[in-house]
Length: 116
Length: 112
Image 1 (cartoon, each protein chain N blue to C red):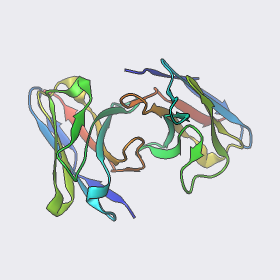
Image 2: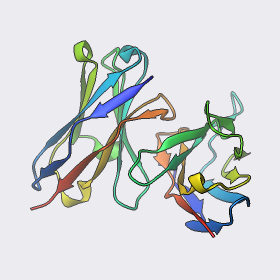
Image 3: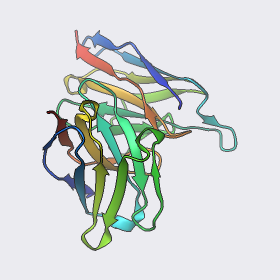
């Protein structure tokens, strides 16, 4: 079965960067897009972007253009999301999720706290 | 961006009763060339990621109980839980994938 296991919680200062990993197993990594979605406490999810593990095709939501970078290492079936110039409003749980249009498998989430 | 607006924000329903959640998009998510509505529904329980329930507005994901159903077209959609069970207590979200990907603000379902 599809399993997505994310890295642990992070605490960062404003202006810093954070890099979250997402280890995929149970399926062919190249076959499904990996998306990143974040969710602040009490809010709806917010899509950040997608990546095709089988190519260099990547798409970022306009809100995050210039601040987010999505990469992958196919040899270890792991995707990464790096967010820079962190501010307090970036405090949220960050999820990776598979899917091209809807999201059918999700990681457990990584809490990123931005605080001085 | 397409804005998704859900109503109500929360509702309390008796066990065995029907729960109805509404979702409205700021523009149509019906793609005329294939007559499909680009809308999904998710369930999220505390401390868990969202779980996919429905896509194409009315197609249940494999393993989802048939008490969950989706309906609607264009800009107005509904998720119905026909007979509420205790394990259905959760927050429910709609998501459009017609243009970009955006979610609604959620509807919290509780037991009355």
